[in-house]
Amino acid sequence: MELMNKWVIVVGILAAGIGIAVSVFFRLNGKDRYVSGIRVSNTSLLKSTKLYKALSLKYNILRGVLAIGMIGSFVSALLLVARPYQNQDVYTGVKKRDIIICMDVSYSLYDLNGELTDYLKGVVKGLAGDRIGINIFNTSTVTYVPLTDDYDYVAQKLDDLSEYFIMQKELYTEIYDVYGYEYYMYPSEVQKRYEELREKLEYYDAGTLLNNSSRGSSLIGEGLGTALYSFPYIEDTERTRVIIMCTDNELNSFGSQIMNLKEAAEYCKNKKVTVFSIFPSREAFYDPENYDYDACKNELERAVNKTGGLLYVRTPDLPVSAIVQDIQKQKVMMVNMVMTRETQDMPQNAFVALFLCLAFTCAAGLVLQK
Image (cartoon, rainbow, N blue to C red; front, side, top):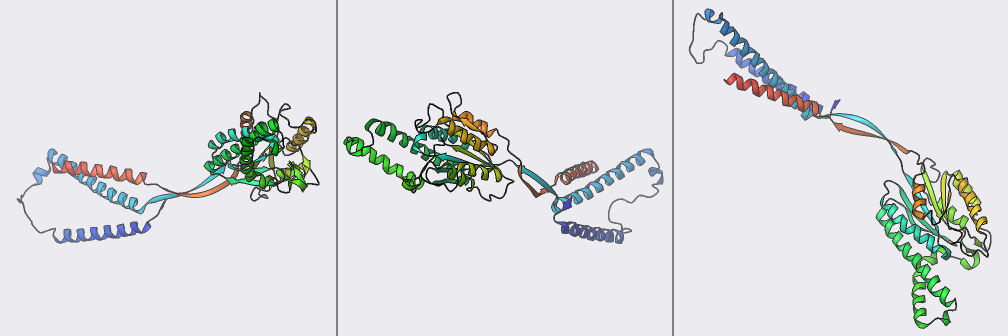
């Protein structure tokens, strides 16, 4: 235990010393001077009686208690004013993850993406300490939400993404699948709705379809690689980092990629980033005539397994909610072992001592008055 205001003790001792010296001085000077009362002689017989001795002993004990109580109260008060405290080193291991949701926003995945964003809105509300970010990609990648623990902002942006996927679905199921792709053949009211949808969709597509005509679409490796390098301080491998990737792995590249899926997975492994993937069911797989379901799934599964993660196939028996819950149960390593020195006040003992001393002082004073 230490005292924060040590000077109070010094001042208190000096004040007490001066007070005692002054009291003794006046007491010695006035010791033989008669002040008031009735002077009695030949008191030796009275002082020898048992009653006198008992009363004198009681009186002296009470005076002693009174003196000790007053001194104890003074010392306890000084200690309280001096503010006793102790420094305590607190070591905290914080279980925190950096999670990036990496979403392939190809129009073939609007149902799976819509389900993921709708469920994630509830997950985000229950987070405590984890940072979350969102990347969306197709030909190119957009950092839609940088890593943050502002969960209200994340939930708001997820709402916006939900609207995006709803518009994607409407464009395909209610316009393209019904009226085809020839715009000039649409009825006037359909043309109007089509123009409204395209205007809103282009807000997102302008970032994710950059150079689409020359580079292709669904560049999975580049999407994963960009998510990896969205983590700050990527060389700090002590942090728990997770990528949740939603894709059907239907690569449509017109040339070589900056980073293919295998290379991106290798980089993730080296940087100790775990990748989990959510893959559509066979029934929901887009364009099975041109893409082999098992080949796409197996290639993606090998990539995520290399990082220590798992691939989940979204089926009626395994909805996105169950997948994300399972990912959340994955082991989170203890990170950020931080030592903080806390100053903790310790007035308890001095306060109890002051209370007891005042109680004894008051009790002795009241008895002496009687």
